[in-house]
Image (cartoon, rainbow, N blue to C red; front, side, top):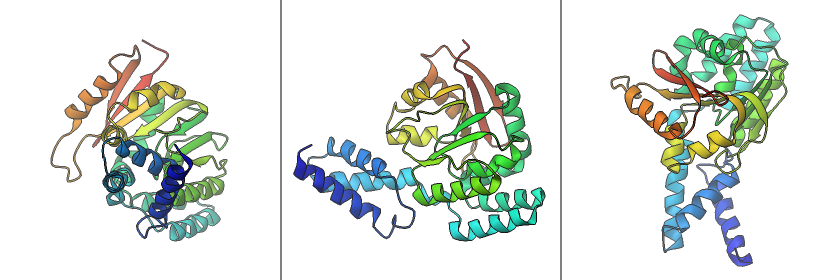
Length: 274
């Protein structure tokens, strides 16, 4: 890209990041650049491409799923940790997770969620949490030691700062990263990669982008989940997403075990087993 176009791109990215809508959260620059670059290929007018990229960014960020007040949440966690009571810590984590639709839907069966998954994958020593959202707050339900290396990736800068603060309070290494996993694949090696309820949004952003990510993840197991009901709970999505998942991995010889929870469909994929 010529120097003047590159400078122009940086100016647009800065404007979007500093806009009232995104200033506080701090959106990953690589995400905005990727969206604009792709839309420029489909629109003759740059202004139309930028508008289309902004619309897609809204879908990628998904503010409609909700977010806690992160500063207040940090204070709540500090109070819970200082109590020395693991029950209080769990209650606090659950109340914060309730602010986000994806993790709120999982709360009713969180006690069994990871135990059933780890029955399949074994207890991981290294986790990669892809497009993590608030899921790292589930750590108290995983029954794993604080020696666990828990890498978490998200495009929301404020959320990553919050997650690292939480990890430190929990006695974990602060391994959360501001990273768009579709632009820059994680390089860390692990035992299990969690990709929870993100594949439909990945595919909506860029059709066909999921399998290169799956291939690139340096783990034995992929744990891929989908919401099995719509947001109102009235309609089943299980068969639709089951077909989507199998269409994505149909060219791979991987072994898959399916688990079904109250409103979430989970596939444990062994990349080493056909």
